[in-house]
Image (cartoon, rainbow, N blue to C red):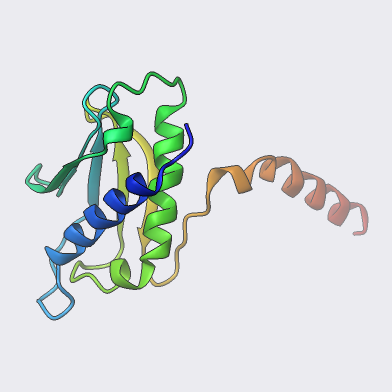
Length: 147
């Protein structure tokens, strides 16, 4: 699925609406996660707080009836890009740190952790982390050989 400019704009707008609910000048709200639920059937993107209170909702037209087997991986990648592009806005939200943006399917099952807002923690795209365990094991073995 090739992401269209309209899809990017709709996602960016949804993230701005989430941030608008938690303006920087307000007292910090305590949340653990902001849950972003997407539906392959309806194309609906809905954001909820920890208590299942709806924050915002929109329809991503390109996602309506999307039958791709890797839909959630593709949606996660696009959402991560948008969150990263708007990181200054997201990180200034009046929510006590740490908190995270989490992608869920329409049954509310967690699919991906998208973005963690914390002074010391950053979530890196999983594609970049492929074979990290193997690389660390090789590094450790080489290090132990020198001892």
